[in-house]
Length: 610
DNA sequence: CGTAAGGTCG
Image (cartoon, rainbow, N blue to C red; front, side):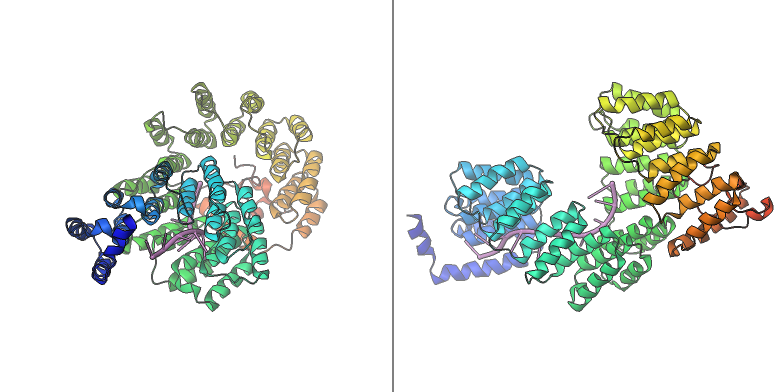
């Protein structure tokens, strides 16, 4: 009956009216205008009979994020007859961040008796992933098979993506493997899945297979590959991706440019990233954020702030990612002045402060040694929103500034309030104990890890070794390492080596150093530390041997020497007297200060750095 | 009528 009605409408007149309004709706650029057209189409009754126009308005409303108006169009139309309208409404929800509404809508659709089709499933899976509902995703997956859409490439690509998005990469891979025909989109989806799971090597291996089967990367694949190469920090491969992007004119796609900047940033190629950035005239917020991050990631927090000043001159709205980057740069600088300024800036620009950003701001204050402000912010978090990382931030903040007792107090309070400490909590509290010489507390907490079923990782052992080491309990430290279930890494042996340096135990130092040279043969810091220990015991022969071994230092090391030299000058200007027993040459004390020396991030080289 | 892969931080 309905079909005959529809056929009646399908005369030439209706068709012309449809295409007329279609053009108007498409060119509509504000909601007010759209609402007017909507009401005209409603009063004339056209919309009731035109599935096509109904869908157009639904999509247009959803472009303006007016999902309620879109829904009212759907409800007023003859949707009962058309799976197209159901799919359009589902798409409106799924593609605009209303993923839970999408799933509710899907279940309404099923209850109404409408059969989903190859257009329905991709939107549904996208929403399952956005809601992190793999269990529901699996239910829908079985419906895919039951309804016979199991070998549709669109549906399969969406399935791969859904499983990967929920962290079930192996389930995604199974779907991928079973596909009879794979297109570029499926390959890219699978490669992206590995890239997102930080398995860059697998991602590139799969890319190779894809190319073997004759597929060429398009610009979207290029974006993913650039991210994977960035994870590996492989400049050579990065330049190959860059060249490929230029050859294929993908450089005109902003996401490609942005991913290249981020890639070079992770490869440590600040200057190349800068060049690309300078040549990009149409920058969006992601371009700026990528360049800001580039500086922060490469230890150039001051450059981050300088670029931010430049950014303010452009008409760009910052987002919460920008805020996070700035806060993290400020944490690196440890400047209280900047901290307060940025916090203020974030509030004034009405950037949405979620818990992650709130914790980052707290962390910034903590790193700037403004623990009062950090604590105040902590107390402002409603109890039902408090999470483990809020506690971790505070505990590590107190610990790193030598307030071990406060850190311990907070840790106990946290347990009393039934929060479950994680591996980071234990790292923070053990490190706090080690820096404040709280050996008994540290031992107790190390035991407690079992109660909270937190696996003891090498970094936890490193804290304990450091703690015993500082307290002069070298045998306890060494015994702990010998009894480790997993293999001790460089952090653990490094902590022991430092302890040996502090307490002048050359024999045990040799054991630690041998392990370190085996584990990290190119890490010059350990050679320096060991040669310092030999220098302490006036064994110049061994000092010479070690120095010879580390001669082939790379450009990174040279840069480091220059930076340290500059730092020493600055330190001298504020009357800091270096502990020159760390300098590893046989020279008189006044000469030692003029020699270059090496510093590493964990401050293991200087015995006067705690 | 039209569907799937994609950039910044953590």
